[in-house]
Length: 175
Image (cartoon, rainbow, N blue to C red; front, top):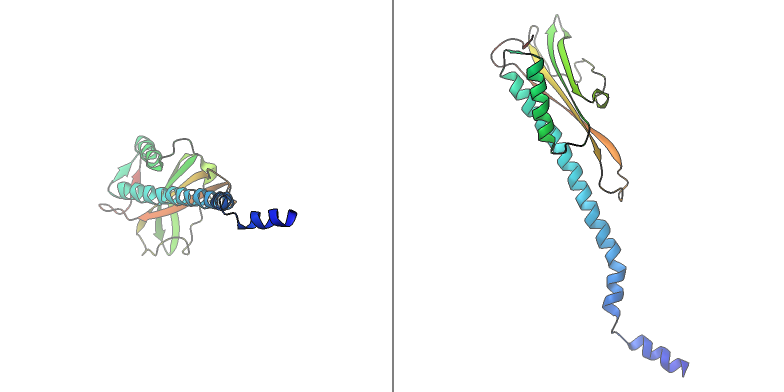
């Protein structure tokens, strides 16, 4: 009797798809959440890259800037991040090469300055300039918290830089 019941149980196929779904559903859910998390991370990083480029381009078209202009640029930078709750930071600097040495003309920071790394002026991190030339150096950073820690991602900071040469003048003046 027990042998007959066991053989009948093995031949029965009516619940096979439900069991297969129960086994595969957690794996499908993992890959779904993982793909959303990775995409969101990539989107946040790309927002930083694009916002830095836009800020550098806008500054390069000016001949002088002031605190109001920097404040307005920070507002634009914040808007481009598409995440108003995450801490962000922006540093804008004018760097000039004089006698073969990079020198900081001026720098302005906005936002959560703790997200930005210490500024190092070296030929390995800055573009090659001839003596007397200047460059606008824009550093942007945003704090990111993954929507799920399913892949081991928690909170992290994305930071990126952008460079632009002044278009109409040798160096942008800060007033």
